[in-house]
Image (cartoon, rainbow, N blue to C red; front, side, top):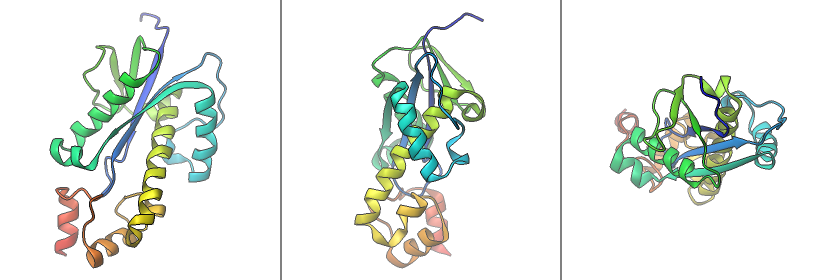
Length: 190
């Protein structure tokens, strides 16, 4: 396999949420970067992710890409996820020779994207992207929870927890909810 000089890892978060944007990060780790506990963001606590994200930011070139709720509703969640990844990749200040994307789908950009199933568990730059994207999105949902207090987004970050579903049933949908998302309609009909 050809040796690549600049490799970026890409991951997204928020695909399975009932509310909020989908967020991706692209990360090029600096040569020799030693970051402790670099792993899939889902295997870390909120506090661990915050701490590790600062180490990643100090030891990488990174960018964030976001697709809004309106874009999710217009395109569908998969296409919006790919759009957020594309935005993250194209926003990098240094252009990678290879982009490794977590999962089975990659955006059509640079013709240098390769997918890696469970890449956030196997490849450090993808793990780093997973953490940065999660921290960025969590902060958005915490801010939004101040405006929309009835859904516990400061704790569930838009995922379909018991509190979130109770809030949906009692107070209805907000502008941050993915109104055309089938699981929302099924929950509201119960």
